[in-house]
Image: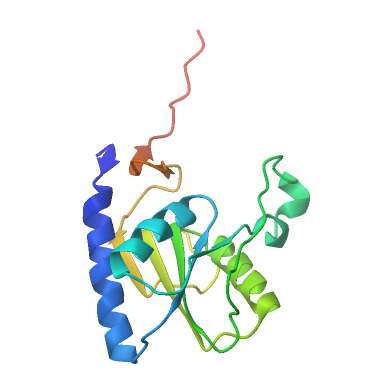
Length: 173
């Protein structure tokens, strides 16, 4: 398995979100995508769900707990939240959930803007490796991957996920 069908995963997330929003009585959520892959996914989900509020994006670079180790990427773009998050129902979107640290950083930034009524987490891929107690409300798929395997979303048009296998070391003679 080297590629996953993103269209099928998006359809599953849309169906799951519609069901969750209906059960929860949420009529007008604010969708926020995490830069970069989560923003690409959120753009498609926002369009499919026909949400009224403009789409927001977060760049969590300054909120990461490994900021001092990895530094600032030279292409850091600002977050864009077009409306208030105060007492709003938010759909937070990311491409891949593994450790939970990206989501923790995103929640920290959201709460710096205000206190939402609720946060629903939607991801394309949920995979093992959690370091924090964070779980998605809706996911396109759950993949049992080896800790050395990585999954990468490429886009923005078209979106495609690729499973990256670890390279085996070359034996020296």
